[in-house]
Length: 442
Image (cartoon, rainbow, N blue to C red; front, side, top):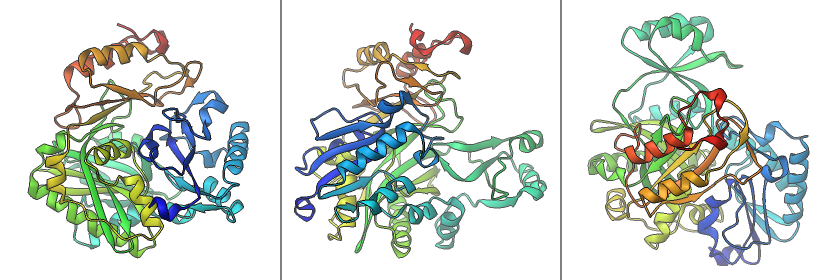
């Protein structure tokens, strides 16, 4: 793959700088431009985070650079990227966007875009379109129904069978999802939007949320390590279904036959993506309900789990999701990978926990005490994505991410009690108007 890149300088453009760590041994890796968490682990020609220009760490589940084209920080960020892309280079995006596509066309003569055209990728983010195709393949799923705003009564009838989930057509990280238990909540929580319809499914209690990364090649699909997703843990996130990490060690509890089903379904989904012009890395979420894996959604991009998955690949001397993405886009042949059940068995224990700002106000954040407390509980604890001093953190934004060479969850909706308590002390347990987060100490 390095030979295929040749003399092009590789530029990472993502959400977080540390997600690119597995690229660090590539001689071409020269620059990182991210929204938060500038890459600092090794020296690069260029390393810049948007938050260094704006002074604010944003909630990445609701904020998009495409929505702020004229902001002074966006203008400066764009100019810095244009300069970096002027030499012979290749741009590796975490997620394609209008912003990056525009830059790629402006630098078409010098910079190779290793991602889809932004509007092409945007189609794959429309969940009803994708899940309708997945259902047509016969893959077990949540059987979403699409109900027009004018026909909410149909959703109310579904409530007679138990709680339901409401969801907008485009969501990320658990934002835009709501559990409804009674008709009153249905009316007040109905997520109205331009499409004037809402996706509705039954709520599946006691199901375990899992995520898997994969790569679409010209000649097939490779599937990487699955993890149990951490969802809606109150010490870490305020959204009821908010994403707050991954536990690859907990995936060892999944029955091998279910892992076989996940692998087969992911390969079929990847084949559909390929048939519609997709190349490169993507992710799929499932709910494991007993002996069934129910498809929930496709993530047509890198994911919050990518860095941890890449670390496992490096430790097992296998190509990681980032390197596979580059290789697939360059048209290289698909490598062989072990069956998913074997990969899970052989993978060392690894988990990551993402801690968000849970207070309702913007403030500076000091995570040093939390880091100390978590390392006292587990010496394998490592911190990344930590916010820098003097950077203000919006409600819902990530304060830090911690990894452990250990298991941290049982169901995905719980956290190891000692870790949960430490993060809870960081939150302070005080009324929101008494925070700010700098005072969240035991």
